Image 1 (cartoon, one colour):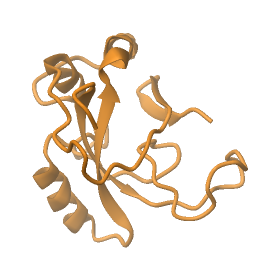
Image 2 (cartoon, helix red, strand yellow; image 1 turned 180 degrees about the vertical axis):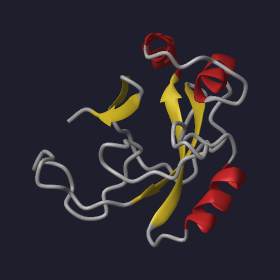
Image 3 (cartoon, helix red, strand yellow; image 1 turned 90 degrees about the vertical axis):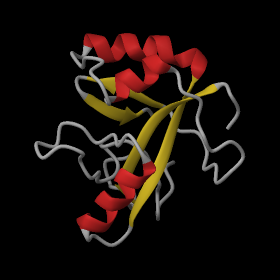
Image 4 (cartoon, one colour; image 1 turned 180 degrees about the horizontal axis):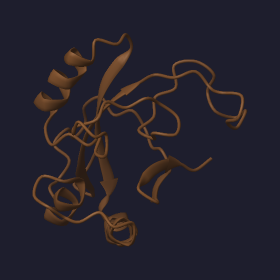
Length: 136
């Protein structure tokens, strides 16, 4: 990814098979997503409210501790041009920009550190009512 992408954080997610209720155009096996309506995510906090890890090291530890087959660490970035609108959606949803949180990282505008390595693609996601959703 180029400097036009801002680090959001890291998620630990399963690869999921398409469910009957999902759009038939989605890939059928091994779908990789950062959306909690499509895949299972490992939470950062014990209450399960936050599933965004601040570092790849924290995410790798959580992945190992989850002891579930098929878990993967995903580094996530958003296009810099989309960050102001995304932050507005997050604020409307009541998530503050406290230290170490996803909104705080987006406000900091740290460049995604993995330029040119293991890029997986683009997923249309949005923040709505406290959850991340894939828009299909």
